[in-house]
Image (cartoon, rainbow, N blue to C red; front, side):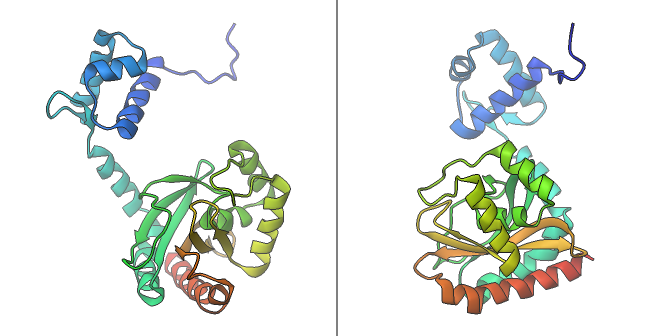
Length: 253
């Protein structure tokens, strides 16, 4: 008998997403390459790919298949409809102009940090994460800022569900150590990521809350560790982030 609590899945849908993920990460690929990677007969692979092409999510300009820009349209529309993005975009651009470093606005979904918008500066560096990237909460400044302001049960559940994987030698992978740092984040009002996600990069972040209680995201400033030291964090970066957080939260109310 089937356990009613067991999620029911369609293997064909799973397989279609496996193919999309393969094309996303590997780039343009021939039918035979995809069939081999998926360990499927050529005929079955062809049916999957043809269906994806006909629905517009895969294209075949020559002899190779690749993901279409339909995903960009879908993601762009979803992002543009978010109140957080609408309120933060201009403020993030101003942060970059003011501080001369990268600035970001992110949200949280399914236990990950999701990057919504990045304002770039030619003289700075960051972690090279693309827009829409799903990144670990425990290894990023924005992720730690959001974790710190989650309700306690949700915070612990999220940490346990996603784990504390190593990104660099500086990544916090001990649960108790992370919880201790999150307490410090709550006390000082901002989080710091020192080389924990990308070597040589330091980031500072603050959470975005609606009505002082509902967490909807975070904003950050990131740049070379050599330029973002404790004095600059305390006297320049964290005050600038706090000012922008207040403006964004007022816009959303």
